[in-house]
Length: 264
Image 1 (cartoon, rainbow, N blue to C red):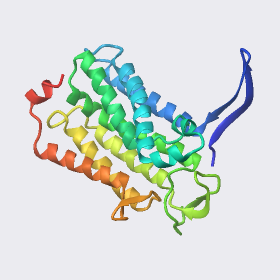
Image 2: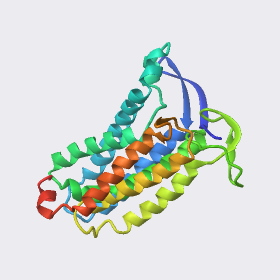
Image 3: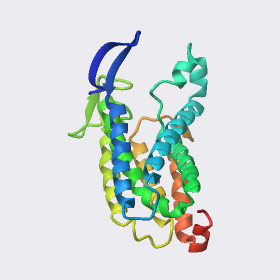
């Protein structure tokens, strides 16, 4: 695995000494956000929207996503964090970026951005839905390079160990990170190619909720996450079911143009 792309070692700057390195997961997050920014900016280039809209959406979605993911991580692991000798280090470490918390935080942050620009939430939800898949697919490459979020043991030809992973394993396991990269990459292409022709405002966002929920629910079957409900379903699977139900409900009860414009 390649958790560190390049290690500069200890660096002295203005009298301060710190360790400088390019970490693979952080690099892939940067690649994900800049790729999404590039696509969104080009998508809006010939529109009447403010030139800063794309950059503000990506910046605040990144910030909201990080805050939301850390908040979810703290809530889910509160007992362990409080029992730690240094809980603040646990809270503010670079680990613990949980996707569902990040998605919630990003949605809240982007909602305020769209409100400030007085544009339709549902129209942009359709534009942003495929980009969420793309960002997630790229981010999972970072997880693979770090050796995090892998699956259960497997004897398939492409199964592999993660001896330096988080946590390390010398047993061949499902590389679920790559499974998700491939699946979400295909789902990105499907939604992106159709983003300009939604049947009703918000319909592609609700399709995103369904597809993302199904994808994560199935992947969790071969993941090593702790099971909560009946010792069968993980927390991610429970949230996935809610996402699927919300998506199905609004696809079966579509929002009309008036209700969509009311949110702008």
